[in-house]
Length: 584
Ligand code: GCU
Image 1 (cartoon, rainbow, N blue to C red):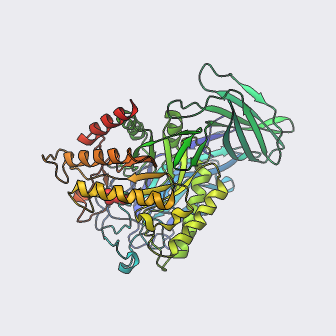
Image 2: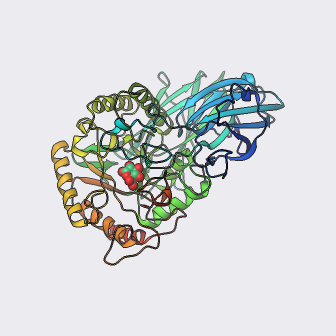
């Protein structure tokens, strides 16, 4: 549950300038840095460390993936004493060890998900010292993996520096805000809201985990027409209840209607805690070759994206979120995938409010199934799948879960691996379809049990390079074969071409803006002619930073239809036109 401020709850944002030090010899722990360290330089938090500095006293800060240490001294805000106090990290890439006043609070592995440590017993009323060791190094038994042994990824071995098994820069550090959170001793610990539709009415199945003896619910609609406030007396059964919303205003991209549900926890007849949640009443379902929202077929027109911007790297940057939503609206998109990791909670809150449909993806990109570390990679994927669903389950914008991007699923172990993750995801949430975003196509045997077929294709770029006619023809045949085999809705979850901003050619030529525009146009025309295709996501919304590699000029992926500083290329104008025509 994202922290809130109300009569019972408070949080204090520790963002700002922290002390920072690289630890090239990895000696910090032995040297007692957990209790505090000298010789530091200021660093901005939240942000990646890689582009904040030029030097690291060794080969340069950019490619230094750690370990490195952060330190912050802070006083306890008034009114916090005597409450349940915790430290909440929005995200730290990749492995974080946390100490408070010299006491080890815990470790978290995984760079894109929030984690919380109880700090009540260890906080001082005055001066406190928080120390975080961050290790962003790449390894085969991490997810996403890196520094793979040559034989690990037969057929897909393209090496880069840093040697990632994925195509984006492995930015490191404390990348989302760190909050000091105060909650009451008797509190609400977890809320699950699953919407349904019953004729004109909406139904909200609510599940509450709390340490109180009873709770009540206040339902508020957004906007003037809605009933102001309705206190609902609910029959709780083991912390579960159902709310009926007569003549409900459903949530959809066209009408992103939201309700606010405020849970008030009672103890001895007194309210001892409260938590408000914005919810939308909408349903998602797969029926034959259709993807249904509120029972109506939908078509996903949108993009993949990265949390990526100059200098701050993968740091949480609210203005870029606002800008990207404005770009999505301008170009006529209704959806995006959180490629290739969970995005910030604030990004999803705005998707609820602005009416964008989201395929929510774990950080499992570049998976391979050779022995070395396979078990550990499965454990991590199970952790990341649970964390993702636990964090994002109440967002109406989230319409599907993506368990992984482009796993090397030729390997016989892949199907069993994904079967386990699929069953886990379904056990946590039965209200949304689950998929894996594939690059192997028909060979992705997991499509037998997955709910949606998601495929990435670059015919006319990586294959049939420069020859769009044969590329599109081959794609058409492959899509038909895929549908014939699995009979499930198909999403082309990635397609696109690199275009160097300002580079032009007529007739169109690879790396020119014209070729990118033509490539995307031909794909959209093909995809919208296939009745079983329910979505098209262009790779990528904006250019973004990658590792160094022969196929990555300036260490950039230029497949954005907007530049990295969010200016449109020719393709952006072309897509806007195409999608406007489709909507007429
Ligand atoms: C892949 C992959 C992306 C990558 C893209 C590309 O399909 O999923 O992460 O950036 O292709 O090569 O441009």
